Each structure stands twice: as C-alpha cells, then as structure tokens.
Length: 188
Image (cartoon, rainbow, N blue to C red; front, side):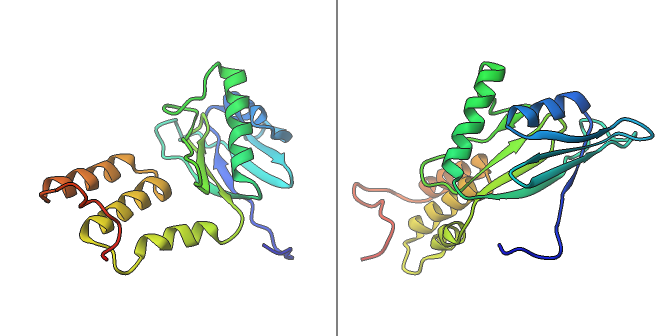
C-alpha cells in the first residue's frame, strides 16, 4: 500500500462496551478516545491502525458483527503475539465463542480475531503471496480428486469453513473407489 491523501477507518459495532475495549487493549491496542455521552464511541490504535467503535441502542450481541481487514508485515509473529497475550490474560487461547482467534496453520497468510461484540477482524500478510496461494488452487491438470483437495484447502484457509472443507473431502472419498497410490494432486 502507498500513502494517500485519503484514509479508510472501519467503524465497528460496540455492544459489550468495556469487554471490547479491554480485549483490544489485551492485543496491544491503546484506547485513544472514549466518549460515553451523548452516545458511546471509542477509538483504539496500534501502529497507525485505528479501529473505531460505535454503540447503537437497537444492537445486541446477536446482531451480526462488522468486520475489516488489517494488513501486516509479519503475520506469523502477530499471530504468536496475539495468542500469547490472550493466553496470558484469559488462561487459554479461545478458538470458539466470543472473543476468539482462529487457528493458523504453517504457511497460512491470514487469521481472524473476533472480539466480544462479534466484530471479525481479518489480519493478512502484506504482499501477493496470499493471492498466489488462493489462485494456486485453480491449477490446470489436476485430477478430479486433486480439484476437490484444492477446493478443501481454499475453503479451510481462505473462508475458514472447516465444515464445508471436510464435507467436500468426505463426498469425494465416498464417490470414488480409492486404491493405494490414487491420491495424487496432478495427472501424470
């Protein structure tokens, strides 16, 4: 990204007011602004990245959350830092419920943090590797099974839909009579 005269700043919902701000502080963000009257509004910031939060009377925790992307230079170290901070604060790294942080497999270029108000913030490695990884699932010359495996990888790593990824693999295995040595990614 290059510097611009314009800036985009996400404004996320703010239901669990104190818990949301505490959560982002735990991840190393600083509260730079907080207003409780005439309406609730807050700003957190870290390394020049701002997250703004607003409260609306009609919202509750069941209202779908907002989301945004944060691009970082070293996704692995950010994931390790966030996981470590959450474990220190909560005694565990929460992977379900609210708040939570998604798992991150080796070589993945993104993970998602969901705060106590239900906002999903996706952190992504800066650079083209993420797009190249995503497009690599469209390789030509894949066997039918290779295509299903590529689809499962895309569902798991880019959509975080583990259920759909598992279902795709299960259906492929049910629909094929597999013999030893048949599981390969490319036709030869």
